[in-house]
Image 1 (tube, helix red, strand yellow):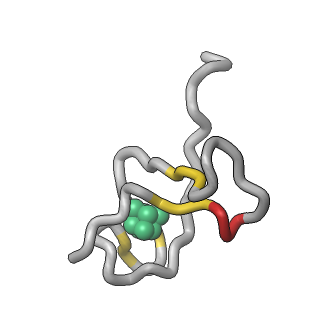
Image 2 (cartoon, protein in one colour):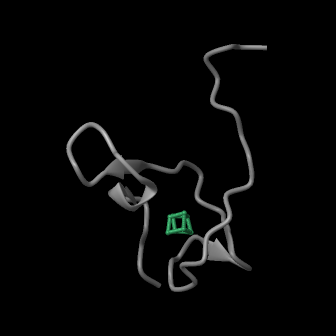
Length: 55
Ligand code: SF4
């Protein structure tokens, strides 16, 4: 197994108006999450899903 391969896991999401949301699960091929406060985040509130696409 490639140690550098990203681990796939179900992503629960409550943003139901996103194109990739189906039954509160994310179905995007890839997911990008970034910090709203530069390169580091202090809490989860400092993070944001930038893959979001409005339906
Ligand atoms: S792309 Fe982001 S906002 Fe959209 S369903 Fe996935 S996790 Fe939620």
